[in-house]
Image 1: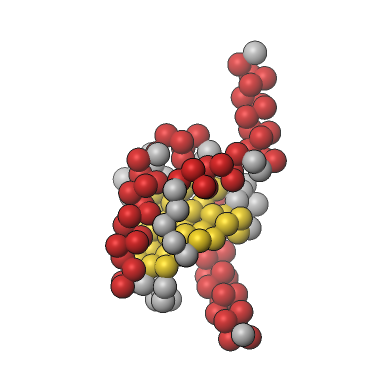
Image 2: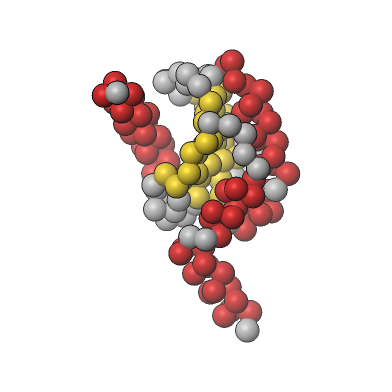
Amino acid sequence: MKYVIAILLLSNVMWSQNLEPHQWKDRVIVINAAESFRELADSQYELFKVEQQKLLDRKIVLYKCVANTCVFYNWKQKPKKFQIKNSIRDYSCVLIGLDGFQKYKSNKIENVSVFLDLIDTMPMRRQELENRRKKND
């Protein structure tokens, strides 16, 4: 059990360094998959891709990482591909909030509404909507 926790902490440290520029600016979804789970990662990505406008509205960027290659999508510019040192052993899809903390993690393909509905209940998102409503009044 201690070994599992250590691995999770190390992987979170790696991601926290890479994701730090997003803190307080973007919500981040990270799709992680070992090569043997590539189809799951591709399927999950396709579900998100269809909902680009909703992702933009909620300030969501996405990293799709399969094996040791990641692609960054912000839905505004051409995707950026880069290599990571740690190899991925399974499949997961993780939501990280504006504050930089993990909000949700799944080990299966999820409907995009699972993520959007969760975000819509968060205090910062509700404040964004309230500010938008006031601006439009």
